[in-house]
Image 1 (spheres, rainbow, N blue to C red):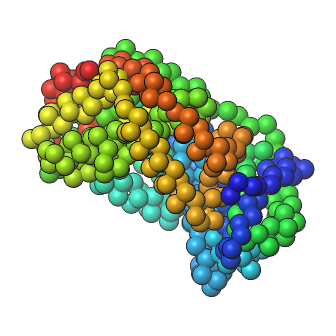
Image 2: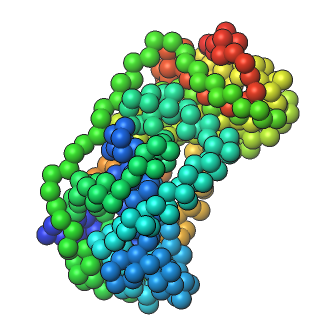
Image 3: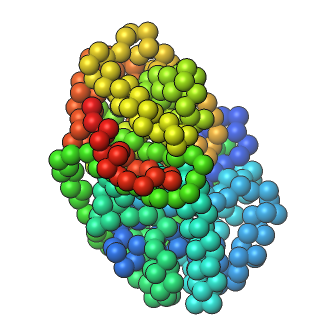
Length: 425
């Protein structure tokens, strides 16, 4: 997968084609540079709601059943997703059905009806989805962490799913207005990955099905204010047997030269079962069932985060231990052996994850949408290989500071102050 072709249609829509040998499947992914980050307080949640509405019927396929039956009939794998900066729609099928995939995806995005009665029905579905998220503290705690980090006044700090009030208020006009602002050719990447014999046809058909998107000037997003003077806490009181925490620090975005080192650092800390935190907190002390460290990067900002589910009686001990591991890397760095192990892990996991046409389409399209520049897998792994232990220690010293520290908690605890007392390096 170190080869791809890119074309730009007359309307400025970008299309990527990745030919794969020995593949009989093909994935068509439409990635739009929109999501909750491009919303305001009054329409927060519309990107996600709209993603649902695109499956509700077009003039040609008047309802959900008609639309999805065509895909089920050919055994296709299809879905959609909404993030803070991207929204995606994909169909993966046997490559002989390529044209049907392009026809359906373009039909959904260009000709959906958005009938008010369907909008009203979907409100109930989304409110149930919201309840499900809130009832899953392991996932909900990371939403709370971003709210704490960026604040409710900035779109990055708001929930992708939106607010109940907004969901209940949305009307057909809201969806049409939003499409006219965001679903524009210059904001869309079509990525087709799979059976190399079908790529010439894919190029031909892309113009036919996606040449109709309008193009006009697109608004950017609200900048982030990263100013923070001292540690911050968000305590969500809930009667749970286990306390769920998200403990992390402000770090770097996708455009930062440090993002490769940050990736390696997150693996060393808590990226797998032989990582420092997993061994120390779960294996040696039995304090948590799950504990993992990851790094999230938006285009201009990001963070490093450790999440864990911990017995509520052991919560203070666990937080102190996580902070101690953070600080240890800032003070003492890492050794060559540990660094190499993390790099090899990233290489292995990257190669495995890019074995299928849908993952490959994701890998290429995300970079094109967010960075307008593609780093091929070999080059990405080369950048990982170039990470030096000195850089790991340097970024650890930069990010592991009290003024960048944030803790979100879901659990049966009374006072934030008790946590603030121990939240420091």
